[in-house]
Image 1: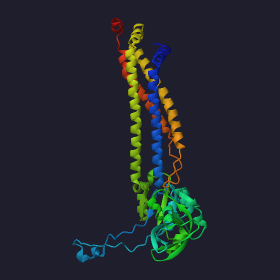
Image 2: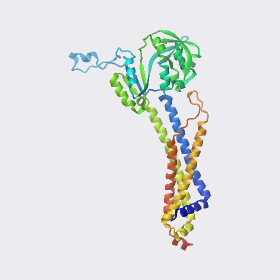
Image 3: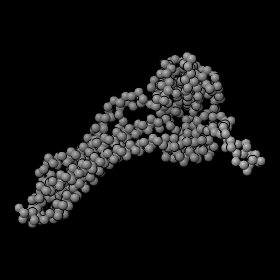
Image 4: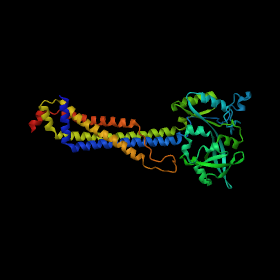
Length: 419
């Protein structure tokens, strides 16, 4: 049968019950709109929550683990080699926290083509002295420029300039929680005591806020030189090497490689933050489940509308078949009706979904725990729009398939005789 003729008949049937057609199209439009908006918002939320930690986490963390000696002296004694030795209160080995031969390891990492960059760090356990009260704290001695380049350090500075750590000697950027507990303002000089009892004054040049309150109450940042001076160590004293890779997926394999090569502990980002990946996967799964459910519900609406249309258009279908339209032609007509609803509603849904996402993206979202977030997060991943468009067509096709099969089997003689 002529395609133009089939299209004309499909258009006539669509417009004959235009209110029902409009309801079906609105159902598809609403479903696609919510599908796009929900997935975009949830993906943006996942990215925001993951970046809250992952942006500040190295892909591979190299450090010297302090642990008890695996071979105790009694195990080496020949007279007790056949005995089972019970040893209690095993003390750690007499080792320092620094990474031995850190300069050579640092140079080797930089020469690795798989490595994007390396940021050395010195960890120092300290006490913040507030009058007669000592508050427990941790100072991270960092290479300021490398830390900012690899881990977006400046994004988490709520007051002051991160580069001041490098330019101003004996300076410190306090965690926001620690600054509030000490009532320390920018420009103030605070007293810090090391675990060895050395007290040193440091000038506050900024506030740092990670978004995790318990961390911000303890952690602060200083330059590597200042921290080494604080601990009374030489300029080759490094406790941690933070490695950023070009390909995040290689982190587990390379961590094992570095552990064997350098004989130090190496923890990859997947192992250190597995709970975040699990949470993101579950939230994404829920978003897809809700979105697909909306599309299926819309499909049932189209199915019911086409069923009603077939019931009401029995006479028209009988006349079509009596005038030469085959069952396949009638099947194609109702499939065309369903797909027209799906395509029209789907296109509008994609447009409205983008528009609603853009509106949400401009809504202010200010919270003290997330200083870098100013509006609600939205992800405009083209994949979501592609999935939404495909699902709108597939859902409406199957919604029209079964009613169209029913219409194609109508016997015109029975219908006309009944009339």
